[in-house]
Image 1: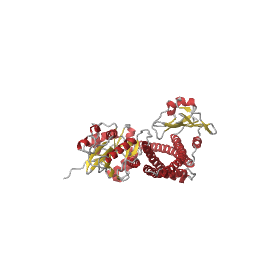
Image 2: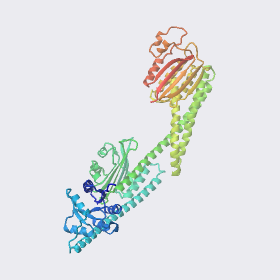
Image 3: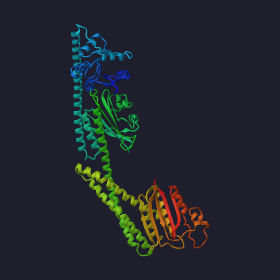
Image 4: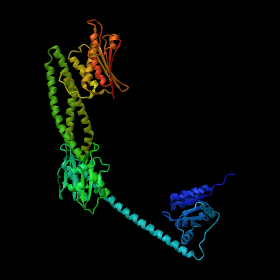
Length: 610
C-alpha cells in the first residue's frame, strides 16, 4: 500500500512573515502547504489545487478576503471546502461579516502558536461557525457596505493612477517635441564651422525652449588661462565678461563631478550657490540650473559650464535638465569639431608649403646627383643622392596627394556627403601623412649623423628594417662597402619597431658590418637577415671572412681587449667598438653575440620587443 498523501492547505496571505509562521506550524503537523500573496492568485490556486482547507487573510491587495470568499463559494467545484478567515479584526461584527461572505470560521491574528494547529484541525474535522439567529440581515448589510467601501477605494486609486498617467503622457509628449527640435538643430549646424555662431545658435534654442531669463555658456580658454563665453542680455546673446581661473566661483566647482547637473535644493545647498549669486548667474528667488561639462579626453578637467535661471514659480524638472544636458553635449562636440576643422585647414596650408619645400629639395638632390658624377668618389655620392631622391620621392608624392585630399575635404558640400567623406577619408589621410613625415624624418636623421650635424638624442620609435637599408646605402657611399660586395637582405621580422635612440642602433649595426668585413681574407658576400622569436627581435649578419680564435672570441666584448692583440699576424680579431655597442644594447636589455660558423663569423643582435 502506498503512503497516504498529506492534506493540502492553501494560505492566502500578503505578509511573508505571517505566512512563514503558518507554514512552519502546519508543515510540522504533516500538512502540504501552498501560498498565494494576493486575492486573485489565491482564487486561481484554489481552483487548481482543490485544497482541503483555505486560510484567508481579509485585508488583501486587489481583491479583498471577503470578495475572494464570495467567489470561492459561487464555484460548485469547491463546495464543502472550509474557508477560515485570518484577520486582526476581532469585533463580533467583523466575525459575522466574514461568515456572511462565505467563511466557515474565524482565527484571530496574531495567531497563538500553541493553539493554531488545533484550531485548523477542528475546521478540517467539520467545525463550522454560524451567525446568531436574527443577526443575519445586519451582518449582510455590513458586508455589503464593506464591499461598497472597497469598490469606492479602488475607484479612487484608479482615478489617481489615471491622473498620474495623463500627467506622464503630457510630459512625454513635451519631451518628444523638445527632442524633435533638438534633432532639427543638430542637423542644421552640421555645416557650421564658426565657434561663436555655433554657441549662439545652440544657447538661443535653450533660452527659447525653457523660457530662461538668464543664460550663460562658458568654456575654458587653454591658451589664455581664463573662462570665456556668451550670456543672454534679454534680447540677444553677447560676449560674457571673462572669468579668471582663480575666481571664487571657479575654484569651488568640482573638477570631475559624478553628477554634473545641479538644480533645485541641490544647487541652493551647494558650496558655489552664494558665489553664483555674486557673479550674477542667478538671482534669489529663482529656479536655476548649473550644468558642468567635463573634458571628454582629460579626466578630472572641466571643459566648460552652463547656467540657466527663470522664475521661481517654474522649477526645473528632471527631464528638462536632461534636455539641457543634451544641448550642452551637442554644443561641446560641435565646437570641438569646428576647432578641429580649423586646425586641419591650417595643416593643409602647412602641408602645401612643405610640399613646395620638399619639391625644391628633391630638385636640388637631382641636380647634385648630376653634378657629382665625374670621379669615383663623386660617382658613389651620386648613387647615394639618387637613392636619397628615390626614397624621398614616395613620401613627397604621398604628402602631395594628401594635401589635395585635405583641400577636397574642406570644400563646401552637403552635410550627408561631407560627413561620409570626413569619416572615411580623414583618418586615412592623416595616417599616410604621418607615415610619410616619419620616413623623411628618419632618413634626414641618418644623413645628419653621417654629416656630423648632431641631432638631439631623443628616444623614438625606430624601424630597424629602414635603419638597415639606410645604413647600407650610406656605407656604400662612404666606400666602406665595395661595389663588388654581394649583400643578401632577408628581413622577415614582423615587428621591427624598437623605442630608443636612433644613433645607438645605427652605430651598433655599422660596427657589426665592419666586424663582418675584418680579417685577412675579405668576405665576398654578406647575409643580413631578421626574424621574431619569443617576443624577441633578432638581426643577424653572416660573412665568409674566416673564424676568430675561440680565446679571442670569448674576450670580444671586454674593455681594452685590443691592448693584448699581437702585432701583425694573419689571425682574425674582434673589431674595435664592440664593447661600447654591447653597453648600448645592455641599456635596452639587448644582447650581442659572436660565433664562428662555417667559413666565417655570425654576428647577432637580439632585442626584446616589450
